[in-house]
Image 1 (cartoon, rainbow, N blue to C red):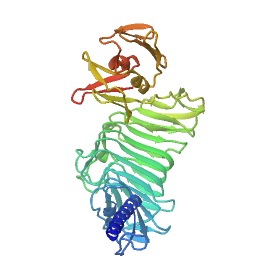
Image 2 (image 1 turned 90 degrees about the vertical axis):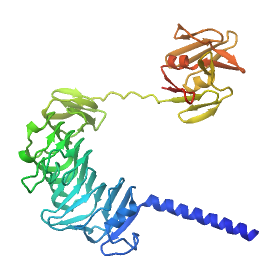
Image 3 (image 1 turned 180 degrees about the horizontal axis):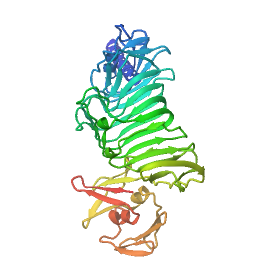
Image 4 (image 1 turned 30 degrees about the vertical axis):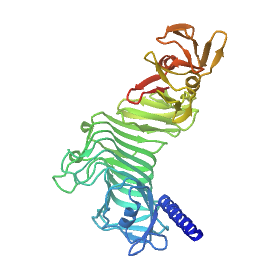
Length: 462
């Protein structure tokens, strides 16, 4: 019998150990790749392809470490993924090769970090309406093209890309090889330059055939340069996108504006905004055309736009060239947001739940004369109000902030800040506990009350 019990304990310990290992492995989600390897993705026994590592990560976030030189010209993703995959070099000489005219498509969110590039003429990287973070390092040079938001005919929800370091030859932010304006982006097309050196941003689709067109953008095109450089922003009329929103070109933190800025104004539905912001803060686009977020670097600096002081928050501007200065001034204090409270009581259940935390009651909520009655002290305390009882007058007084509420047992009225209001059902004592009408109490303190008849549950929100 002893041996049987010991065997069972060992089996349980083995299962728990394996489970713990699986969780730890799942948390790591780090795999290694080396061209030509045949391993299992570990540091000492790497996979031979990126595809194997991507399949192993699945739809979670993960990191793929690449050894040495890896040619990704034949890369074909095993499918779309939902997490963020970071691809990075193991050592400073790790390098991606892309052969002449080859295009690499990443159909999921990807961060390219600390890796060199050796790319042939017309080689290109493409996303698929997914997030692309390019942070390949100061010495990395992608001297040809990156296409955003998609390669070929496609309709995507939005496009977002950040370029944090390295050198980029040309960014096509209106796709590539598109044959109809029925394709494009339903939302915003956003490019953030945050440290990279970009030779050219093309406000047009890349093309090599006469049948190729531009795309449609249902939202705004946002080009924001927070640091780094952009030498030129150009367009071709027959490849320019049709933009339903606005074109926002913003140079923050005193960044020198591009030496050449071209756009096809009659294809921009809600106007063109070219904003140059000095050191001291930044201006960021919002989803609404003409509306921008003002963000100061200091509580003692405020924006000055067209001679007017503008504090942190949203500001609506007119199309055109706009200069933003940052001058001495005090940002207004932010209002303290009152914490939201949700209270639930169910008829016949001796329990009150506040923000998901349940607490037992001596007396359950109940229906009396067609009105929901709840224990007085429990409801006031859940609302964060004080409770005082005057036994001589059988009156309860509750205070929260500037609101004072009084009820007297058996009296069909409630007094709120000195004003009496009629009650359908008076406060009353049941099983030695005072019950009060929940709707009258909650609404006196400015709360919303909802009733779910199938579950007989009342919900109070503040």
